[in-house]
Length: 461
Image (cartoon, rainbow, N blue to C red; front, side, top):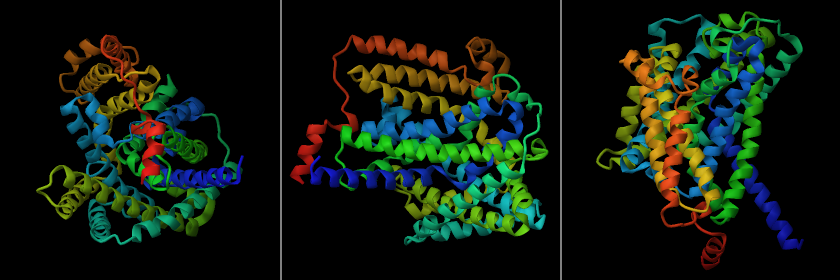
């Protein structure tokens, strides 16, 4: 290898590592702390298969979502248009609403309150939540109005600090706590992998990967990596690194919940982690841990406010970015005052509706290049079936026409585990693939262009 090739390889490695850290920080919002500990406590003796299922949808799928964006070389709107114009408009809107005002955004305030305020001050009334949320979102709104780099600077230090504290907490739990044999909660008694798989939906990271993956792709591209196969390769390596770190953190948090005394008595992961911090590090450690979670949630809130407002300002140009900021802040404030358990309960049906189509979209985007042709009808039929089936499952879970809907869809394997959409979607995809085989063969360009095209474009710049 020549000196120039060696230097280029080292440069690419540096770009990949930086992108991996960016990807990790994008996925690792402080709100995601709350799910693995509860799973660890609830799964009890069935913890290994349950956490494996959780890591599938909470870690592997988000990484694949970013890779899917890299393969297409485009953003979420261009990707979702593969399902048709209606799907291409409505689905990204629902994704941004779910990771914004109706779930992930209010979750930042509720997790902060449950982690720092309730454990340390004993306040858990509706009035105290209103006051806290009002102050929290007023600050987030002000920062989102004029960020001027403060969020990036805070995140640069807060994420490592939070990781260090988590590492200390996990190691102390491994040393000081021992897991006693316990019966799994009802949901984890049979098919714990499937239950963990569905629980991983709650992280929302697969949806976030589809929405914000273009940020990582653009960052690598701006560092000099051309579009095409080389870009996809760099994103793949970054995703693997981020995936390994995120998976290790989730596994450690699950172990804390698994070994926490009386872990199944805790209603949410924020309270469980706060109590574990108090047991293992004392009152001072619990306060520091809570403060860092609070600040990390604040940076996440500002980032979500900015991203969602920018998306809707682009989509609906007559309403300004700052107007959308105010609208989303007010909605998130109202939702957050209902409490963490209610926020998660509200999110359940929304997430259950969106995830089947998101998984289908990611899977088809990854498979398409392997077929050597563009799969137009495969995408359309599979996505239509997935979203219709998910809609029926959601209505049934809400008790709307449950008897009629159940008789129509409960034949599908995995229905009881909320995975009944898989087989019908596969059938729809196969029918679409047969139709595509009858059409013209047109290869899919990785990253939006061939490697030769990418290199010629870069040389011409």
